[in-house]
Length: 614
Image (cartoon, rainbow, N blue to C red; front, side):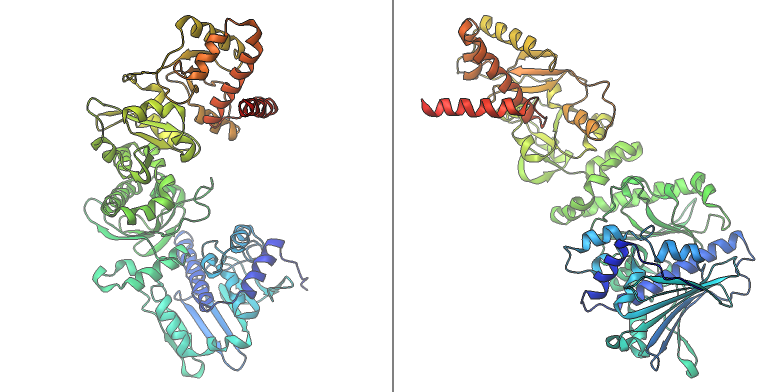
């Protein structure tokens, strides 16, 4: 006996979106289910290497498509790894493996649900686009008991004990009235040959009394000569391995020969995956040995900063019976990784010659790619060469470090940068005023990883890389405006230092400001204000918090006024209030929270009104 179970809320929402969304590409369900069947065969093929008897008498791996026009049903069968009851619950009935919660959230505002199906790994659910009932009969390798999963995609699902002579899975679709075309063998042949021809197992069309027909070529695409592969075939292979539906931005098909031989077919998507920055996201390469799928969880095969690269690596030099654990420490894997990364970087260098084209890549993956400057010492300089940054030189076009160097002024021997939360705020940061006055370009860095790679790449092609607060050049320039009296200024800075002793470590006059009365910085060599804020936001310890320096512009009329007022006792309260407003102003410029927002709002309004009434 079976008891009907309700879908989790997220799955119900997902199925409602899939079932009720109208679009023309309904054939997608077939290539999704064929891809799932291919994965099941891959897994059993690998497990049978470890346990030779596990697939005994199971026959040649294949995928069978059986249409029945009289019943208006379509069955997709495979003799792969199969599922048990727990697998059916985890993979078909909950969000544990499917990512449906993210799918639902992203599908709400997306006009093309089809673009999201593969991206969020919920391809099985696409069956409900064409079926009003789905039955999954399956038996897992190594187990005797088979199970049947039944659902209409609306009221939940049932799981009951069943029977299946051999291991594998049958997915039977009871087609909707408007999906009868999927029992037409001519139409099915067209879909399979167009979208699944690259599948590495025979896709067999069951023609009933007329027998069986293998529809696809059934050969591994990456083993073919590049000249014999069409762009459409490459794209469909990309769709198969990535479960995405975009056109890849870049493909790289190569054969490495020498001390170790391997073939690679790699792709960079044209769209960033939703989980690019999720901590538990793994790299997306599949490892084959002599066309036998081994694993898609070999973390050492591709560095984390290239985790967006999709594709396969096939080597004849690795042993077929190697375990996943042994793969992680295998020296050949390290060599494959080194050679593969080198090829990717070289190809990116070629594509970077077209600025507009390269920006498509950078917009999607630049933030992840820059992690390599920090993580990959062997390729650090090359990754830095391929990185792009905003700077004070341009309001729109990003620059490379090489381009920055080509524009340095005579006598400038350092690359300068500043970090912060966003470009508009950084452009108006008071610390840049003297650099602008001198015409010195400054990189504007806003990604969290920027705080870390600058700690490892401290020199680029002979040019030290330094924060603007560590500038070791003379930023003084001829000033014609009046300057605060030195004695009065000293009294003011001493007063401010005592007033803000709990918030800043030092108050000092500076020659670096031109328009702003004050700015906030840190001692040379200490953690930047932006990095400290990032650490706080991620609930990291800040035991080594930086000591703040409040810099004062002695040429600013407000500072001159404050300095002159230091000798007038009846102005002391006003001086204190204005000084507090100036500290808050400096904090705001740095993206920091102010200490007392009520005081700031009240006094700012008060002083604006006074000025207005004069």
